[in-house]
Image 1: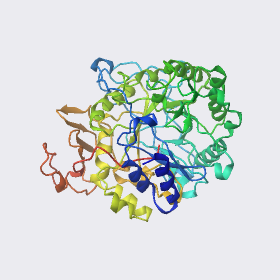
Image 2: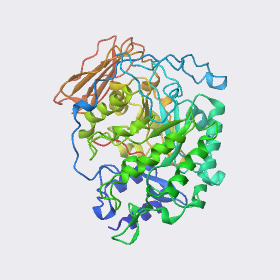
Image 3: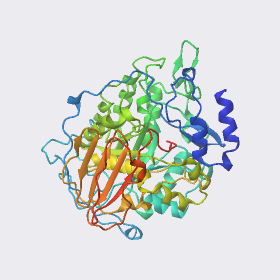
Image 4: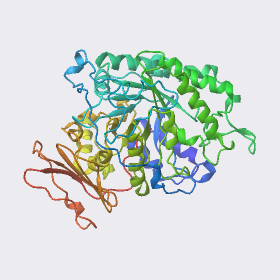
Length: 521
């Protein structure tokens, strides 16, 4: 099959099917390396511009993975205390509570290790510019886009999160450009809850051409990476031109795009996607990652005080033996995706712990698991989809995995997609899941590892996770909820989950699969 023909045929009927059907269809095709990447278990899709189906995700590294050396991570981050009250749904119509922590509150972890600010940032930046944080419940973020205008209900849902990353292609069909669409969405979110942190999307490597970005009016094709063998512009997945960070004129254009957006009070920072793409071995420009780092460090230096810089920067089991931890030298935190493959589970836990210990923000992309896609695809009511994805056996593993290393500034997004257009029927509002909003409390210690089994205890919750079987049990300690116990699907697994007493109800999941629902990032 020719890949372009497949994509076009799927896109032709995109209005009548939902994103999961699109993802499932494309996921069955094994693209070859002639398309500049080795197809992995996830190929994400999205809707862009005139309805053409486009690829939006990062492929796994095609090089041989190397294990992490244990000495780069240090010890697991110990429990800290968030001091800021939550902003509840009831509060959002009123003025937010005044922040009651000082710039000196979190300059050291509880174990005495120093919280080191990103290189080039103001010493007052971390962590008092970070989202308000507490142990009351799981802290959340959302990555989202809408080609038109968000509904009032969607704005309220976004305002209930701690962080909102306004993805590529936000609002160009209503406001004329993604830049203006991002700004207008940010204003509306901030009007409901001024404490939400809003991030502007910027890709480190992939140039999304077309009229959706106003900045493209000044783009020059000569800035794109050139492939001397093919004597043409090098394109990511044979479609999107790639940036060449050695070009100083381009570098100024790229940095200025970020500075223009953070000049607005409503935009709290920048999200840099595609960082791990900048040093791929198959790029025609060798050592290109060093050129990108020069660009990134200059952006860090020029970023106004009080603004946040987050990146899609940490990734386990790649050609980078440190999991790209060096990017935390200029970043305030990292988004993490592609962690659900078996070989990535334990290394990603270590990466998150290392980042949190440095005082950085973590944004883990959580995927539903054990989904009956046929059943799910047939659900044409969004409430039914939320109810379904909130089942313990579906939400349990991603949530339990996150809680193993949750510390101040750790945020989770649990969702089925990032396109908020009504026809996509995406599940993205974390606050609609009881497992996420219920009382959590401070951790009583770090996680305890026993083979493939990990346990951790909070004031109001016990967590048990098996990384080999991808099972999880979340046990509410005070009996405030009545949750089903371990489903029968887990019978016959190599390890047994903890049992629950009458006063300790469990939320759990059965044997997981290596792949969850695909999102569209």
